[in-house]
Image (tube, rainbow, N blue to C red; front, side):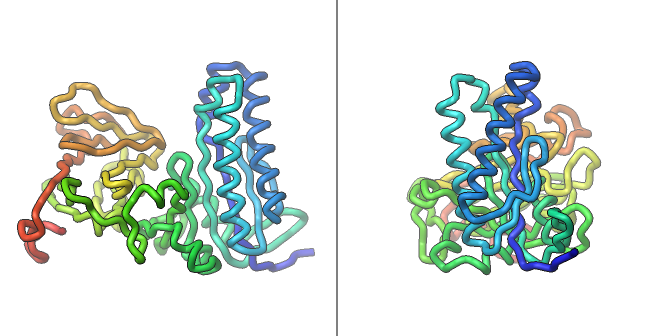
Length: 318
C-alpha cells in the first residue's frame, strides 16, 4: 500500500571507485568499496534514518527531519576520512564522497520511495564536488539557526529534467568555518593583501566579480554567471568560490576542466576536483586550452582599491 510522507531524501555516492578496480583488481576493489558503503549505511541508521537502497558505490536514504540527515552526512564524511587514513590499502584515499539532499513529499511503495524530492536529490548529486554536501533550501529551512550558519548559498542550479532552477546551499565543515573571518551573516571579510576581485574573459565578454558576488557557476546553462554555449561544456560545468581567503575553482562536470597558469606550460587536469586560482591563466571547459575553438575562460586575480572597481552599468560587473 502506498504512503505519502514528508521526508528528507539523501543520496550519497563514492567517486573514484572505477580507478580502484583498475588498480587493485575486482576482488580487492569490491571488498574496499562494499566496506565503505556499509559504513555509510551505518551512519544513516545511527542517525535515525533508513537506507532505502544501495546503488553500487552509493546509497539512497530517507530521514524524518533535516537535522538528522545533516548529522548523518557529517558522520559519513568523517567515516570516509577514517577509512582513508586507517586502511592498509593506500588507494583507499582515492575515494571521494558526494552527498545531496532534498526535502518534500515522497511516495513510499514496497520499501522504495518516489517523488519530486527523490528526483531533485538524485540530480543534485551530479553538481556536488569531492567531499561536498549540497542541500536544497527546503532542507535548510528545517534546521536550527545555528545549523543554518554552517551553510553557504550557491547559485540557483539548473537540474536535468527540471524547468525551474533550484536554490542550493553548500555545507561547510567546522574547520572551514574557523578558517575565515566569518561575520554574523556568514561571509568572510577580505584581509589586507588578499585578492579582492576576479576578472573573467570569455567569448568577447569581460566581467569583474567582487568576492561578495561569489560563488558563481560556469557552464552552458543560461542561468550560469559565465554562460558558454558549447556542446563540450556541461550546463553547470564548474563553480568558483571565495573560501579561506582565496578563489577556489571546483569542477562539477563529466568532461573535466583544465587550468593553465600564465608562465607555466603544464596543464592541471581536474575531474570533480578543486584548486586555488592565483595570478592569471586560462580555464578550458571540457577540453584543454590550446586552440581558438576551445571553450576557454581567461582569469586574473585582482587586488583593487575600493574606488578603482568599475561602477555598475559600465558593462563590467563588480
